[in-house]
Length: 577
Image 1: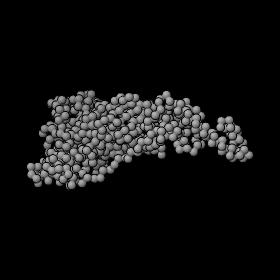
Image 2 (image 1 turned 135 degrees about the vertical axis):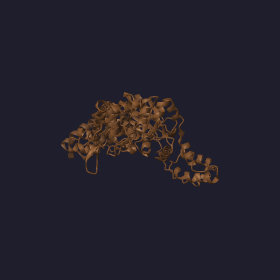
Image 3 (image 1 turned 180 degrees about the horizontal axis):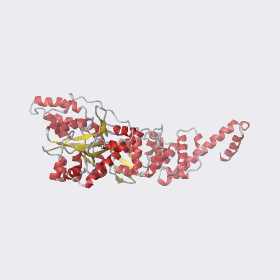
Image 4 (image 1 turned 120 degrees about the horizontal axis):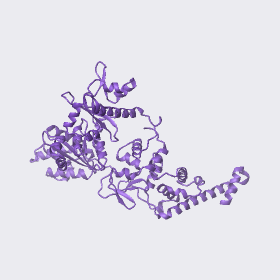
């Protein structure tokens, strides 16, 4: 959905969307006067400074200055693109984003989503109706899965045969090309094309919006590979997707803990027993992209691995990938199961309470980090402690500068039986880059001209425009911001339903965007019942000033030099000037 989305649609969308619902579903809000607040999801804090205004449909953090509309929140919090944010909000309120040729520069991509969804439904239907479905149904029943869970994850079946999907969905050359693009076909050395997934239990993989982007398939016999995933496609990138994340977010309104396990069936079996916060990587180690996706909101992330050597090696790779992301609102932990156990077996044999207890007792990141490093040296000797420092140095350099890194260094100093002062001589710290320099706030009385006050009033309370008198002359004034004010009044006259969020979105990507964002959060010193009279007075004053300026211009030009039209205007202005 690249290209321009009609501004009128965005206006209508923002009048239907409530930013409180959008944010509260992701960051629980509490009432604070006429607004709502929470600890900011964009920086680490203990005292709430993140405020959401239902009246303005705007959020602002007084700690880190993050701010914006519902669209901007999704872009920042969910890392969505502008079109994706529009689509997400539209689906939330039951609207359909206008799709035109100009809007859809990637129709092939959308067609892939549609195709994958149809194939997913086909696999589900096969599990329900195919004459050879019995072994697949028996397998799922033996794994203890209920019909409800099977339907929740849309588990299906790819029948045996070389071309079931190819025949069903590849009726022409273009359709076959799409099947291939979607990763549903394979070819051999002789150029023969056939279904990639055959005789397998099928698990559709969904992105964070719930769209099917690929599949995982499991055989029931000893065929290899045991699990087969879709290849990389225009819509599927296994290094950045997590199986079950969509279902976990859908089930848990506040997903404040996520357990990362190793396979589809672990996720599904845990969900069967009520543990609905598990996700799985797709045949890869946990990548920085996986972690970034989970760490967009404050949460506890628990890695669950087998206790054998392979499991601990996988855990260490995850720990390494997490280093550049440490120190925020998220807490990372590691849990290891006994040899021969996996989440599926634990929850079936010992129950959900036992599994949750293991999660509760998981090892903190710092403990796992230092335990893993200490296992490589003899910590009882001075030589071993010196070696520990040398091993830790390259890892600590990847940790962002801040309190958490300082604490890791202090912990290392304690283990090495030295001081942080000595340690810091040998630990190279990158220069700390200052965040945006905050401009000193200026009071309304010294910084606000009447024009700026009027713009701020209209931006924060657009309905005030309805009782403003004539303003048709003010655009001619040579005053800072007056043309913006005139344009706002004209826009609101033509679109009286616009709210603050809609006005802000109209300014997106313009030279006025940052200015409008600043004014939207500016505190007005006027009482509520004084806003309308104050605004009316400013507009009337500007209108009168514009009339007098125009009158003086015409008078200076001289009556003999006026056109007939200008002469009529002069006479009319004479009565008003």
